[in-house]
Image 1 (cartoon, rainbow, N blue to C red):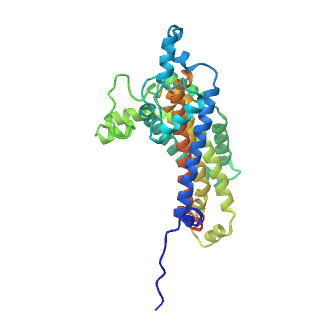
Image 2 (cartoon, helix red, strand yellow):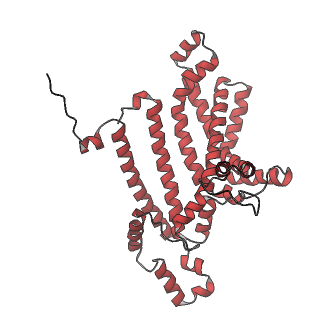
Length: 357
């Protein structure tokens, strides 16, 4: 009787081997290095920004008093050399401390927890709309290649990609609020309205969890227009990528074979076209979601949406360096996590990649 081989733990195999678990370990280590590099770049850029954060936050009268300036710099560590400030920042970051905002005088982590859910809500709604409509329109465009529906969809997607988001936001707000009166206005709820009890921070969901259907509908009505504006660019990109992917797959032999077997066109598209096309669609969807979080500054300011974009704008205007660093860390972390999620979904959809390194 042959002895049963004993599996031993190998640290080297965990980092260099193939398979899903070593892949995740390597990705997480890469993510840590990326975040470290991003902190260095973001911190260096904040030091190169023209202007004095002390003057921006104290005002002219207080800034003329040397004692007040010295106390302010000492409180926020601005009296230390820049390398010491960076090392101190890293030490606090490891403990989950993002520093104290120069503007709000509160921990940056608390500010981000307050503002981030609003941006997450608008970005999730926007990417959902962009995904559903983008895949549908891209598939229809590919199936009607060079015909009238294809031409219309291509013009629409090109327009969405080409229009600046601030122009789209201002135009949409003017037309649907001032002219037509269809949009309810700015903010997340009516002025003076009581927000639902916080569970997720997403008003539409929190109101439903609280059984308050009217508040959920109201929150959705305020969410709809800014989310659609934010989705325009992603919708154009996903539509174009879907069309290109579907057209490429339609020319394969196995698609012609499936059609020759008498399968309906809907079955051919669903089983043999969309599944392999999802690989490229997932990639662009992940990047689009992270970009929506990062690019919501202008949309949130036009619609007075109290999210991460408004916080980033106020931090930049007030030279709030800890606030700027905090927003940079959130955006960078979202990009890294979305790239990791896309790679994981690749291995779930494509069996050939499940055991790849």
